Length: 110
Length: 113
Image: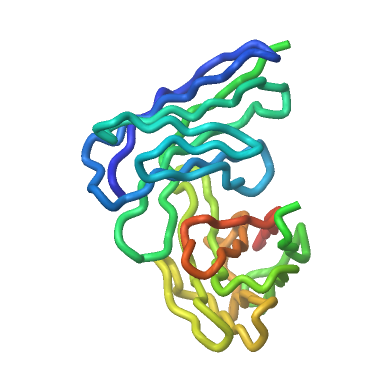
């Protein structure tokens, strides 16, 4: 997978927006950015993915810069249940596997 | 609810025994996957399947066997369990054409003594 860089940890107040950044400066033109999260002791959870346009679904918004070298996942109103490790992934080719790096531990505080 | 169930959720077995972990999806997604998660290694792909009767090896297939006779089921068998196979096992599904949009089950925590 293309290399991604994320902060190790972030804090957010409950009810506020959580903005999680990801750098993927080596991304190729046809590679998508995927975001997953893993809550403690649960399976990974797909959140959203995008190519170059901003995307929004019921869970989050994904903002991708025009040069596609970075992106930001936005949780508009974070809750305590959003405390998890968030992974930004750029899969390469069609080898089917997702490579989860170290991700960002988001802690939502009351 | 990710529409994918795994059983058992917890299993303790002895070295050398055969163990089968079950995975069932309530959708009819083409792709199914088995991963293992260990501290220090993250998630590693064991096997995947693109459709019924089509399976292929991932990164760490040794010691594991899979089958997929029906679209909705993808069991993983440890033929002769070893302590190094102590891990948390996750099954996932993905729709055709979106292989990286994977939906994971809750996991099976396997301990081999």
